[in-house]
Image 1 (cartoon, rainbow, N blue to C red):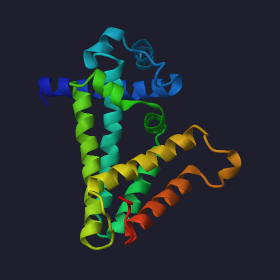
Image 2: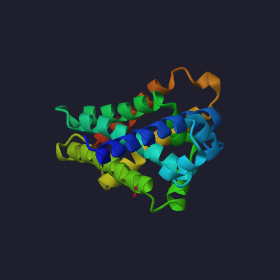
Image 3: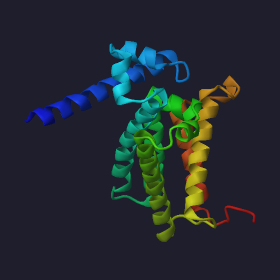
Image 4: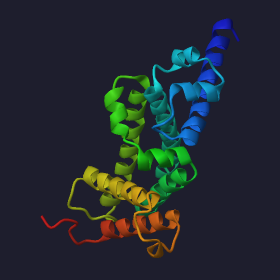
Length: 218
């Protein structure tokens, strides 16, 4: 390995270490309260070194979000490419999203407590934002392909554009996550854990897609 390659490798490893430390800082102090100073302390780096890799806290936070979406997309692609029927693929895709969120507290907090759009508007041309847009678009395409496959194979029956159905699925799931995360329901109404509830919601939505009755009244 040449000197240049070694330096590039060391730089990338330092970036990974910074992201790992930043993730811990965000979890410890909160998404809104974590500053570059705190991240530098967590990473045991001079703040100036931190700025060599990320120009501000929002860019660093966006890089973490994009990296998590990368891992989620890899899992979803495995599901979508599987040799099974569209109904099982869609249910498995939703379950994958739910399980990923459950096992990743940082991602779960971002999904339920944070306004990602504000980051995009504030740092719209940064590399992490562009990366996020790419992986987010890929996630939408994967889910769209599953629903479209179901329509083509006469498993799902819809009277709206496929993209609108996918948006409704995502909004329903995220809305459920926000409600459950913030304890917005009476405790006595919650007889199952979050994962079971999201699975039931997914089954209910899929049952609606399989119905030959119109999804809308207009």
